[in-house]
Length: 202
Image (cartoon, one colour):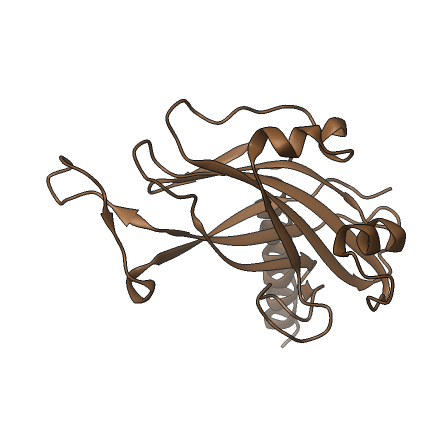
């Protein structure tokens, strides 16, 4: 009976190691993921203070639970598509635990993500954007910067997690790849998850 228990323990350890290594291999700040016609670059990720959030939200009474993250994403559609990708949900995970209990920015629930869609050059002119390394979108693409605020509990120093952001294609090329992109209805928008590794938080 001892051998099966040892094998089970070894399998559990291997599973944990594979999970950790997989997270380590994810792209992080300054790197880009391309899925279909959509490209997403994680420009920055850092701790969020209550004062910083309330200034951005324009509400001094916004609820605060002790911690948060501010992240910036450069999002691009394919050349020729007239609008940026559609924003879906945003999830932050530390280990296997979901950090933000509300993942949809359109939710009316407290602690829903706050997402400000900014023109690329306008973003870099903000106080926050001036601290972020400039990454230009590809020529001819419709692009925007998503300024994302996630609130939650206090985050211990040294924490490292994963952020997942959902983006949807708004247009689609004809099957032969020629001609103008066709606008998709809301029901036909194809959403994809883009997963990035967060830097270690001081």
